[in-house]
Structure formats: C-alpha cells, structure tokens
Amino acid sequence: MEQYKIDEYNHRHINEHRRNFEFVAEKAPQLDDVMQKLEAFQIAIPSWALGTGGTRFGRFSGGGEPRSLEEKIEDVGLIHALNRSSNSISLHIPWDIPENTKAIKSLAAHFGLHFDAVNSNTFQDQPNQKLSYKYGSLHHVNKAVRQQAIEHNIEVIKYGEALGSRALSVWLSDGSNFPGQLNFRGAFQRTLESLHEVYDTLPADWKMWIEYKPFEPNFYSTTIGDWGQSYLLASKLGNKALTLVDLGHHLQGTNIEQIVSLLLMEGKLAGFHFNDSKYGDDDLTVGSINPYQLFLIFNELVEGMDARGMNHATGIGWMIDASHNVKDPIEDLLQSVEAIKIAYAQALLVDEAALVEAQQQNDVTKAQEILQSAYRTDVRPLIAEARLRTGGALNPIAVFREEKVREGLIKQRGEKTVATGL
Image 1 (cartoon, rainbow, N blue to C red):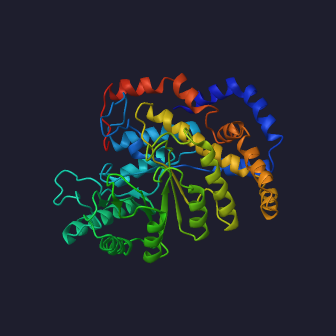
Image 2: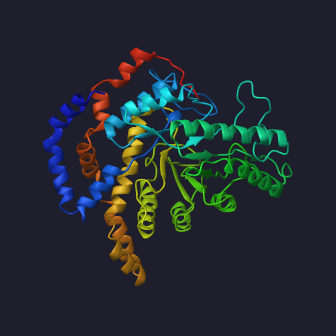
C-alpha cells in the first residue's frame, strides 16, 4: 500500500473528519493524553488469522490468501500501513516455521513490524510426529509423550529468540471426554512438572503465558479449564509465568472483567487474545456481539493499569485470535483492531474520580450513568485522528476496498489458495 494512496484518500475526506473530530474533542477530557495513548496503542496480528478460517464441518477458502510466512508478513504490513495500530505479528509453530530467521526478521522490519509472542502447538499431531497427542501432551500418562511436548515448546522458544520475541504462549487441549478417563490431580501435577521443565529454559527477559479454556476438544474436563487453574500454575512456576485471557474461553455469563481486574491486581495478567462469542469459543470479530462487555473489560484494565503505574501500550500483551469463516480476513482484522481501540478510547473517557465517589456513596444509578456516558460516546473520530497523525488511513476498510487490494492479491496469489496452518 503506497503511502500516497492513503494520503490522497485522507485529503478527500479531511473536511468531514475535522468536523467530526472537533465535535467529539470539544467534550473529551484530557484530550492530549487520550490522543497520545491512542497513537501508542498497538494490537498484534496472529499469523494464522490471515487466511479464511473454518469449522469442524468444512472450510470455504477465499482468494488471494497468503501461501507462506513471507506473504503473511506482507499482509500484516498492509494492515499496519492502513491502521498504524498493528506493528507486530505472532507466530504459531510449527504452522509458521521461519526457515531463515534472519531473512524473516528483516522482511518484518521492512514493513515496520516486530514479533510478538510465539505460540506452541501440542493440540494436534504433525506429519512424521513420533508420538500422538490423542490423549494429551504435557499431562499425558506416558513420560515419552510429555517429553516430546516439552522439547517442542523449547524449540519454539529458540525460534522466538532468533526473531526477537519475548514470550511463549501455551494453550493445551489436554483433558478428558468421559468420567473416569483421567485422574484430575495427577493430570494437573504432570502438567505442572512439564511446564516447569519448559519454564526453566526461558531466557531471563521472557515470559510464559498460560492460556485456559473450559471445554473443547475435550468435553468432560480440561486440565487448564479456567483462570484459577492457570493462575495456580503461574503462581507455582514463578514470576515469569502469567495467565493469558482469551475472551472466547469462558462459559456464557462469565464476568470476564472481574477476572481481569483480579489478575491485574495480583500482577499475573499476561494479556489478551481478543475475539467475540455468542455461544462459546466462536472466535467471532471483536466487538461484533457484545461491545459493552469489551468496554467494561477495558474500563477495569485502564483503572487497574493506572493504579499500578503501568504503561498501557506495553504493560501487557494485546493480540487478536479470531477465525474469519465468511469474511475477508484482512477486513475482519481491521474491524477487530478498530473495535478494540474504540473500547479502549471509551474507557479513557470514564470520569474515574466521579465513579469512585459514586462507588463510595453507594450511588448505583450515578455509577451506571458515568460508565454508560463514556460508552455511548462516539469515539471513532478520535481513533481516526490518531491514525491520521501517524500516517494511517482515516477509514482503512474504505481504502482497502477502493484500491481493490483483495483483487490484486487474487491476481498475484490465485483464486483458491490454501493458507498454511489452517
């Protein structure tokens, strides 16, 4: 995406934008501080999200999907050029093994990107894999299977070191489908022992992010099934181990914002995999189903990070983890980043002093009004202004469509490409 095309689009729409921005800016408290934070806030893009997703029943591939890690980096570079809020990419090994780490790192730098957390994969068997993870990986009753999974995680760390990453993200599908299949205590203890072996190999400046999930692919028990089990493991492992929150990895009605608040209070919140859900782990576009919950989560994040004196942009990890089954993946990711920044901007507008006062006086109505006043503020002009100031597009999706980027990718890569790792 040539910069002049973005500039030309912005120039054609600048007058309308100025009117919208000035209307919102006039009422926004501490505008300069809000704008600086919006400009600095970045959300990592996962390499596996650049192609069309699927379900257990099938996958309908789209055209112009990336065929290699190099092309995935190019797509993230495009996203970042448009929104100036996606300056890092997260790899899933072995879906995206960098054969030449020096060249891959150089290519990413060319697009203004760096590498976020690296993710291990012991939830599926790979070609030529010696032992199967059918009955688990780090919790497996067979020591040889556990050792295979441990060595894979250590290998992923080495790839991450070469790329400049500083975190290992671990999600285990380990669990059971039927009562009696598994000894819960034994499975947890074996998982802890296995993670300890991986943890002990972490570089000094690295973190281990431990993800949890209540169900799927196992439907009776999951060895790391909720935030408490992840927190327990992280606490036993040490200061470099933290709990990773995937928004979709919760049962319906779970108060995710309360979980986030407590993890942040304890210094054990690694960060987020952002998505949205209607029923379970649906991996839908961020903010497409319950944007109010997303805002409430960010309200707790902003308050909690400020209480601890943390940098909003770098204090914890921010990443999207969604599946784009029927939408253009790049458009979907642009929408997701926009939704995250909307919720963040709204949280920045909360009158925190007034909210604390209302809470201290048990003024429930006032507290609700304060939160909903910020939530109902149309902050999109603030986010567009932040993009404008950093060289991005006032409307990234409009530029993407106007320049017929997908059509160009189809001509370059083909109508029915198969994205690796999907």
